Image (cartoon, rainbow, N blue to C red; front, top):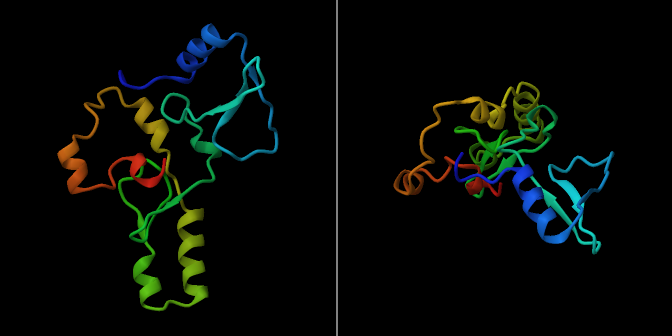
Length: 141
């Protein structure tokens, strides 16, 4: 975690540089970013999933270009949707697969990673090249 910049650190640095930062309330938003406004009106967002996980409120998933569906950005395994699509699964079969997996999900990847005291180093580049689905950034996170 020594290479991670927390939400608090980001706000502290920006506050010292630009002045008072105000939160932008968005009660109806399901976006993962918290939005803030600088004194000049500039609005920016922070997604602090590593240091302030929002797993219990998360309604996001990722579908990779190779057809793997991940219910959590931090998941090590996903659900193959390409196979059923190539086998010409019916809409009903696909819906059952997707709804079944989504409603049974228990992923809390960011919370688990934050709680892990002995996480060790980030995934090494060689290992990531061999298996590019090991980190959330490979899924647009």
